[in-house]
Amino acid sequence: MGRPVMIAIAGDSAAGKTTLTRGIAKALGQDRATAICVDDYHKYDREERRSVPFTVLNPDCNYMDIMEQHLQLLALGRPILKPVYDHSAGKLMRPVPVEPRDFVIVEGLLPLHSKLSRACFDITVFLDPPEAIRREWKLRRDCKDRGYSPEQVLAELERREPEAAAYIRPQRQWADITIRFAPVAGHGSAADTPLSAEILLRPTIVHPDLSHVLTDDDRRTVHLKLIRDGDGRPVDALHVHGYAPRGDSEVVEKAIWEQLSMDQGTAPPDSLGEYAPGKRSEALAIAQLLLLWHLLEART
Amino acid sequence: MGRPVMIAIAGDSAAGKTTLTRGIAKALGQDRATAICVDDYHKYDREERRSVPFTVLNPDCNYMDIMEQHLQLLALGRPILKPVYDHSAGKLMRPVPVEPRDFVIVEGLLPLHSKLSRACFDITVFLDPPEAIRREWKLRRDCKDRGYSPEQVLAELERREPEAAAYIRPQRQWADITIRFAPVAGHGSAADTPLSAEILLRPTIVHPDLSHVLTDDDRRTVHLKLIRDGDGRPVDALHVHGYAPRGDSEVVEKAIWEQLSMDQGTAPPDSLGEYAPGKRSEALAIAQLLLLWHLLEART
Image (cartoon, rainbow over all chains, first blue to last red; front, side, top):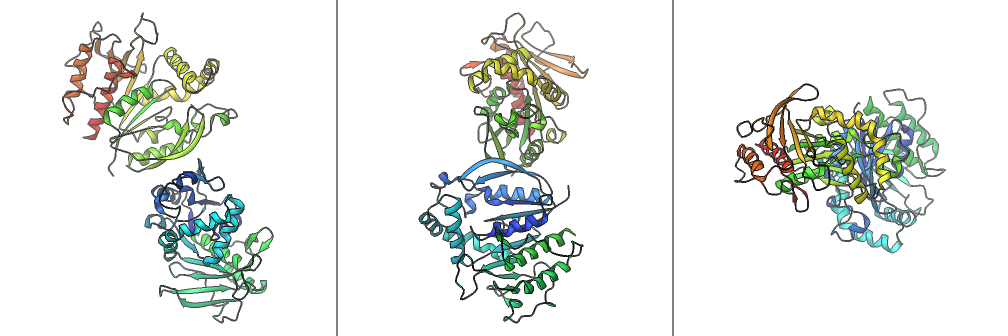
């Protein structure tokens, strides 16, 4: 068994991790990609959590040592017996066997929390949508799929905030790539507004060179700008406007795809960019294609 | 975290593994001993097993690769998240964290099946009671504790026999110590008959020297005889008669206890030999004391 390429997609609850992951896993195919969620390493079920003094965002609420162990095993190409947390029922279930395929996509709340787990990844990603957007997404999903009332979700968001600040958001500093989906200024945040993507490419890994197809002219719907991140570190900021016409995004997609070392066919997979059945976002497609590029390149 | 001493206690269903383990774990104390059962690595619950072409005795019915992995982790002093099979309900449950303490006692159907798992143990034990006795024990336990009818147990024993021959009994060859509890010839096998123990000590590990307190005179209630095992290999056979008076067994116990390198107090722990609440067997006590000696010696 060879060693797989491992990518971490970290972010707070309802930050869009699953949507981002799904398109990449689909593009790679089930026989090449294994996707797991490390929120399965919760120690307590929903009922038990009522009597513990912290939320699921807290490392103490998760088997972090076992998560690290399992990530190390997967990174070595070994199988694991992964615990299972059923989000809809809020219960811990019987574990399932997981075999790492060529690519392992690990998403969840805390995959970048510890040095030991970070060391398992070839590529690290952090999703940081504006809080207002994330709250809206969480409200919608938790009420629809997880049986909570809106009041419960809002109270939980409140309760989680100190731990989000202490444990979730600090993981951003360890990401090679951060992705922020946000509504275009002045266009509101209704469900149907195509979101823009602000993708920060840190020089901690080698990214595809886009300087020959993009400029830093921010009147263009897709542009690339050298900026300083909040912490002062230099970073390339790739901006994809929510209303970018397909033609503009295709130029970037083509440029990324052509920089693959191994021939992967003439066009990027068309499973990218889907954020709801039948709905496509150019911003999402480009974000996914970038991650796909990194996965395929790390394999060569 | 240091590496623990690991002992395997293998044998067929209802061979007396739990009874043997319990007294040793109790003697060591909860803060020094971790006891696990590797039957927890069953792949299927009772309901699912109705539609698979093998019984739980078959390695294919168990996550053997994960069992090996977990034994290796424990042997290195690392924690595991152990699956849980609930025997009374016949269901797979949420896993539990297990930390290896100074001594790890691993009992179950298949801990000696593979070379990789055998390599994890300092001491290997196989329990092989006569089939008639084991069937009686299984019948009693499965009807009382696991909700089966006598007919179901007998049918299951029948169904399991080919796999017991193929996978369980071959593990005997890998044991440093085999233990056979059997009724004294001519005394029947009623529940209250004190059983004799025939303990084979293979020269694969160093045993306490009993030749200075025992002879091979088989008219004595406790004796030690050099014999050939069924496969022709030379082995020391320690026989403890079911009706051995306490005085006879105490001579042996004292001799074993005195050969410990580290001072463990003047007398062996009195938790040994209990096979039912308030019932003591000298044969069981000596078997347990021998294993305890090996565990303590391997620690020094």
